[in-house]
Length: 94
Image 1: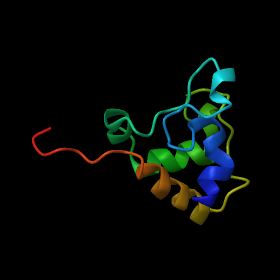
Image 2: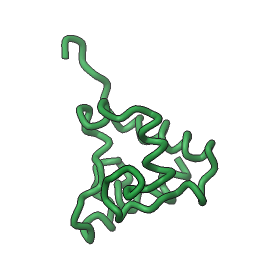
Image 3: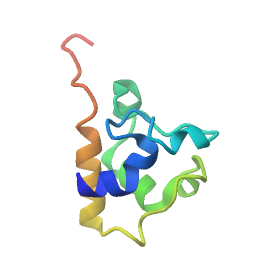
């Protein structure tokens, strides 16, 4: 939780909806981690790569910083685990 709140929440929001206080200054809105369809399309390795290399490294918004030099592998994995908790579970039959 600490890693997410310190490094991610300013853009992605405290509830993971992509509505952090800094998101309003961005042309490309941050991802919404509560969007099940969006999140199901992202593997853990893709999330790791995105956090580590930043938006530019994965051909997304260059405004997302790369955190690979700041965060340890363990910290990135903790952030992934935390942000995935925002995604509602898939309902049976969907």
